[in-house]
Image (cartoon, rainbow, N blue to C red; front, side, top):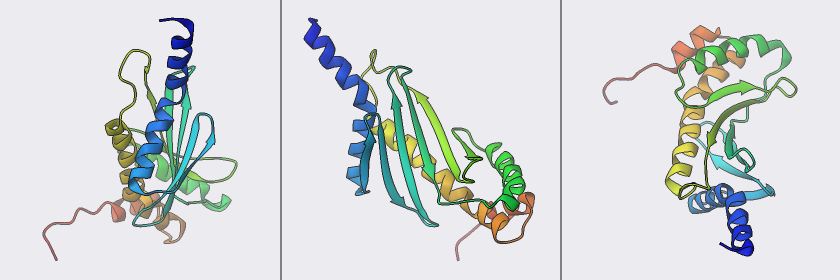
Amino acid sequence: MNLSDEEAQEERDDGAPIEVLDQYFEARGWACERSGEGEIVASATGSWTQYELRGVWRPEDQVLQFLAFPDIKVPPEKRSAIYESLGLINEQLWLGHFEMWSGSGLVVFRHATILDTRESDGFTLDQAEAIIEAALEECERFYPVFQFVLWGGKSPGEAIAAALIDTHGEA
């Protein structure tokens, strides 16, 4: 491989995961835009709220970070209850986690994936779909917990119990 081929390969590797996320967002018809060389932001409508989806690629670490913001901002007086809720929720997650940003009070679902794009076929649409859909499913599943604590006056334990009721049969 001559130098120009190596440079071309590096250029493809540097943005490859963001390109794949862009393709996935466009295929779903979700509005998206690049907010930097290694970053993309999209908007998706869920059952409960509008989600901001953000992919951040760090080629130097080969890490793709995926974030989903479920449009929840926690006022200071409710933060201790939400921190407790986050602990109970995160115990139930296999991939990713919820957190609350201390400065803004925003709740976010975050997952990071190590991708060695130099040694494989790179990041695929199937992988993008798995990461994005898992994030949205968890946001949809736990959104009611946050609402029960913030607006319903429930304790974190009561909110988890109320939100995760298993239904049986059909109505």
